[in-house]
Length: 157
Image (cartoon, rainbow, N blue to C red; front, side, top):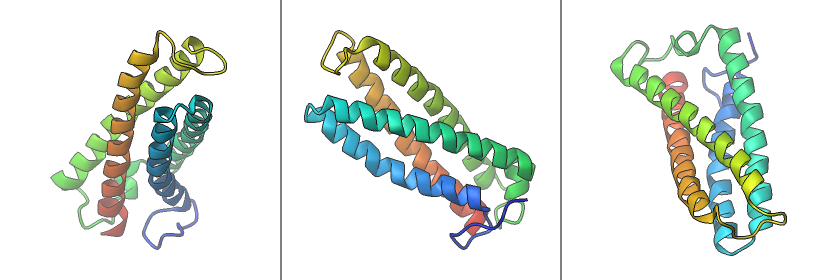
């Protein structure tokens, strides 16, 4: 078992790191969007690639943590909401969002890397990139919100 986290809840240290990363990613997305709108395409690309790499590491650590602890239901068994529809719906909703967001982000990063010129500039793929980027930012924001909700229900209350 991993040591207790630093946020003062029942979560372990890796779970606390995941929650902090979710909170930090949301403002970083806003900055990245602002850079893209301001035509700072290289900065936008670099930040998004960095976020993608960071998320890959965080998700990998999260999965290792889950497996070591026996799964999310085992980790949240001491919650006042353990076994309730509210916590279970929070777990499954967050899981569905996080998986779909991870797939979308990975696809968009790879396709964008291949289809945009270097240095990055508007291109034929721009309209689709904008659309799927907005979808990805929205699902990432929802993933962050549902992750915080799950953390509060599962580890704080």
